[in-house]
Amino acid sequence: MLFLASQSPRRAELLRQIGVDFETLDVSVPEQRLPAEPPEDYVRRVAREKAGAGLLAVAGVPGAIVLGADTEVVLDDAVFGKPRDAAEAARMLARLAGRAHRVLSAVAVVTRAGEWQALSESRVHVMPLDAAAVAAYVGTGEWQGKAGGYAIQGRAAVFVERLDGSYSGVMGLPLHETARLLGAAGHPVSPAFIRGS
Image (cartoon, rainbow, N blue to C red):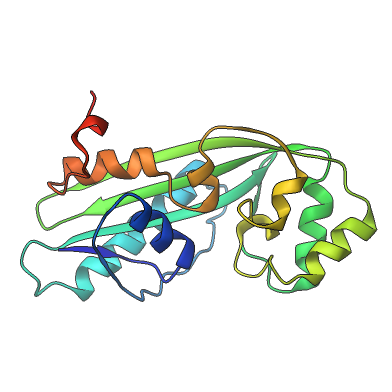
């Protein structure tokens, strides 16, 4: 049985998109970067901790497989998590405007027998935005619960000049990497043609 250690509707939607049956778990893991922790290590650690917490929650389920994920927006060395309020979302968007930033999306799959991890890195180029455009977007409320204060699958799509990498990874769950990890953990994703190498 597969469990998604996340209450994110976007991650659930993406898993359903590839035909995976699963149940969701509500886990509580602090998403706080350690001093001098590289962004890549941070997202990997949080994804692993979410999956581990989920496995503890379903310890009595035979054959349980738990998937955890974490996605962060990184500009230079600054990690932009989920904004606490509209003002912080506006500040994030103002800093991302006219720049290219990285989106790191880590996936961890754990069972009693083992652990598998992957990291997806994408580069998102955002058009220049004036204060009015930022305020209008923040006013939609779409920024809530989104790393970096924007949703690429929503209205913010018009701000994205170019995406180099994984669209699903920027949404919060890189499906290519996820399918490979699930297969390694004994929960292959159909159809057979995705099991290439």
